[in-house]
Each structure stands twice: as C-alpha cells, then as structure tokens.
Length: 403
Image (cartoon, rainbow, N blue to C red):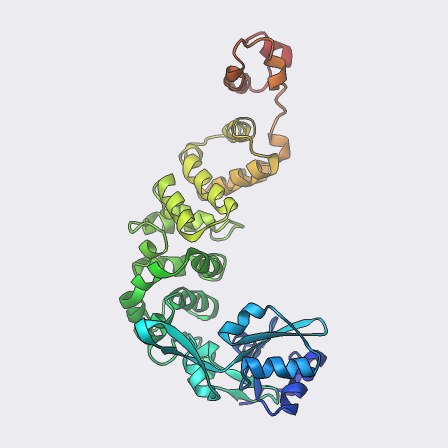
C-alpha cells in the first residue's frame, strides 16, 4: 500500500527531505515509524515524526558530524536513538534492534538490519508499521486491516509482548479506547493474556504507569476502559484497591459523562476513603493537583450529597476559602467538580466568584482580644461559623463584640 502524494506533503517538509538525503548519501535506509504511520492511515495529520533506520548509533553520529547536523539528547544513544536537529525540528532516529536475554535474565540490545524483526518487538499491530519516504507502507502483521476494522491486537504472541514490558497492558487499553468502534468488543486472546500477565505491572514504575493511565482517563471510552481494567484485576498492581467500587463508578459516570469533569472523579468514585487515594497517589507519583482533587472529593462528597440549597454550597465554599485556605478559583473549581460528582448540575451556573462573600475579620484584629496567640485561628473559625449562621449579615464590629 502507498500513502497518497497529497498526504505525504505532511511528512516531506524541507527538514525531512534534508534528513532523507543525508541517509541516502551514506546508503542507509530510513523510514517513518509508529504513530505517524497510523495517523496518516486514519487521515490525520501527524504531529510528531519518529524514524527507524538501518544505521547504527555510531554510524549516525559519524554521518551527522560530517554533515554538520546538530545532535541533542545524547542519553538516547544507549537505546539506539540519536536525535538530530534540522532547522526547527528534532528527529529521533532509532536503529533497528531486538532485545536479547543474556546472563541472569538481563536484556541487551542487539542492532539489526531486518525491518520485520524490529516490527516484531513492538507492542501492537497498529503501531508496528513503517512508512518509506516514497509513500510505501511496510506492514508485517496486518496492521492496516486491523486499523480499518478498529481492532487492537498485540504483535504475534501477546504473552511475549507483555512480558517484554508489562506497561504494554496499559497501552493496550489506551489505544483500544482511542481506536475501537465498540468499547466492549475486545480481542479475547489479548484480554486472556492481560489477565495472565497482569501481575507484571507491579514491577513497572509509577511514573511510567501514570503517564499512560492519564491518557486513558482523559481519553475516549475512559469509563469503559477503567471498568475493564478493574475487571481484569489490574487495580491492585497500579495502586488502586482490589475492591475498587465499579458499581459506584457506574453510578457517578451517569452523572458526569456529558459534562466537563476532571478525570479524578472517576477514580474517586471507586475509592472508599482518603487512605485508598493516598496509596494510589504514592504508587504512581501523582501530581499535587491530583492528590488535592482526590482527597477533597472523598472528604466532602457526603456533605454535597446532602445539599438542599445554594446556601449550603455557599457555606461550604466559605469553609474552603477561609478555613482550608484555598484560593477562590481553586475553591470554585473543587466545588463545581463535587456538584458534578453528586449529580447537582442544576446548581452549577450559580457557583461563581459572587457566591463567596468577603469575611471582614482577619487575625490581626484579634491580637489584642485573644490572650494566647495560638488560639487566634480557633477564634477566627468560631466567628466564621457565627457569620454563616447570620446568613453573612453580621458586620465586623458585631463579630468583634462576640470575641
């Protein structure tokens, strides 16, 4: 199969033609690899171009040095990758390779010149294609057909592919969510292998897991993919509870599915308490924002389930801002996410900056009124509660008279 000349215009920009000419000059083959090939076959414009080549890292370094091409990110060399900077583009050029198992089960990279062998080490058939710069697609494992049918399959032996790198389990669900027409029709062989080899995820670093997992949680069919991962008993290997509550997840998803929700709502829905959230964040090295969002939702969701009026939302917002010291913008965002979580979309439009009144008391006003300075915050909180009870009508002087 060949990509049309019209589509190849998105690949053959001047910097790529320069790269192509250099490799041709030194008699090395170079082809586009991976996601860009998949994108072109799906009529999408590729954003990044990665290349595979028969040239070894040493051969590339010698060639680029001779041609006065700048090389960056030298750490990639040990994996067979040299990054060339041409004009404003950075191109990762990776030598064809296989992983050899040597003494003690340790892996060692062997550079090769066989394109099919290199394709065989890749994760999924739709990611194992190459594109010649003349437009020819090299497809060794039926990736074109699988892409047409929106089928996601591992290359050749699923057990072998997963055991080479268990992160491929997460990548399977990421690409299935992105490509499949039906979120429930999985390749039975792939799922059976995932269940057999799921324990391998326990040995994958949290940083690698969360990078792929976020793409699932923010992507297409995120609810279905998360549910299937739990069904395959993967939760315990990535920091989620083995008792992750899929029933509650399903209920919450019905509330939020057509809204602008934060993906942490999906995770919080399956978690019982803040301990589970903390365990997950620690396992995957989650961000401070993810931690704050998860802990906040779990801590306050019961209060929001009990909300009957906008006044109660305002009272909670006041606590967020003045007791928990959240900024106005963050407090509003967290409150809106909680309203989505409990199915109260009817109140969303009322939650804005105007809903948070200005509290007229600051700690400095209590310095002369509180004997022990350690208790100033406690007194502030008492006054805040009195202010809320008055429906925010008590003035500064009236509040100070109650100290």
